[in-house]
Length: 173
Image (cartoon, rainbow, N blue to C red):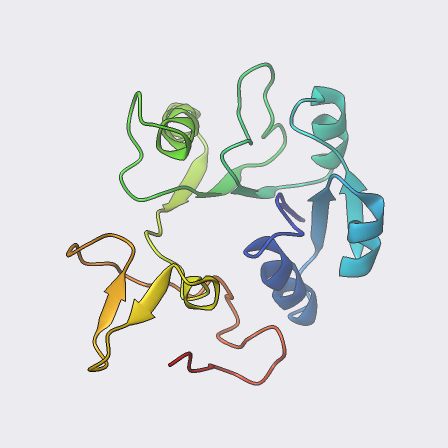
């Protein structure tokens, strides 16, 4: 069983749908029961600030998709029972980093010392940012990003390779 945290967000929602479609046993961790019901499938209401709710969510779980900087390991062993963790982090997470960079770094360090099997996903830009205006094309068709002249490896947050409407890749030009 895989527990997906951040299951109602832009990364978690399509992942949960894909896992369910592929017949994988998945449980969604949500903070709002109505949003959990809207996802369909098994869900549990919980919050990382409530260690008991996390312990209950992890019952019977052997894999954890840890999505979000708020998923702090401090104050309890939030991955109890899971032997494999996939952590969505950020590119260049580092000690004393501002906001998410520092929070993700702390979780990464915890995982590295945990003895678990773990993987870190460190995207630095999502294709969906083109919808929000955080990514764009120049007038001559070149791709630019919100990071000045630095290169950005754009990632689609939808693991299925199809948009949520199921029509496949969309152009946003």
